[in-house]
Length: 248
Image 1 (cartoon, rainbow, N blue to C red):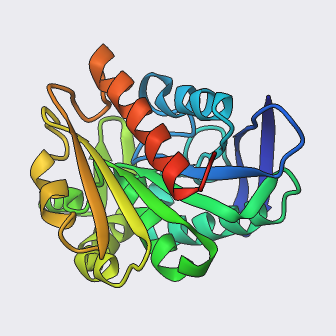
Image 2 (cartoon, rainbow, N blue to C red; image 1 turned 180 degrees about the vertical axis):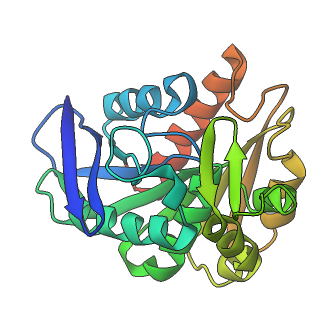
């Protein structure tokens, strides 16, 4: 079952979906954060498809577009890591208040830049979570944009413009230190042919959490855009989620 969700907070309304298993619940849940220029469905509907897949196995999935993305309010130009983390905490609080969701069995999942947001939220809210799942986390993504801002402090990403705050906050964030401080289990998934965020990034950062594993998906890219890549990703995420959420 799919529910359309609108969640109002300072700055506007977030919009997206809650994919629910059959039955009354409360259900274990995954909160999924999309990547830079993505939305709550993601490239080739990856998060929408994952939501249906996990719901069919008894795990709810909440996925909302950040402000400035998808159907949510706001302007993409104002995107900033700190503000997306604030939104992520608001999403987590809302999920914990829902009768259909078990507040004691929740994970965060982040794709690409959403992995940076999920790491920030997880570090702040460890007692509310069972673990963290990261898809090709973009911990070093901002570095390649350092010289691409124009005189007005604007970065053009194709036909989308984003302000300087995005780059400055990403560059200032010490993700290795955040991961080192995590007592939660962390599960990385990364395609070996990822040209946007090289596999070496996950190989570097998987060393920092106290309990971390990296699943390498051969021959697939940043969007896991091969039949074997998406199949391996979904199977791996379901297995990890079931383990971390104590699903029978």
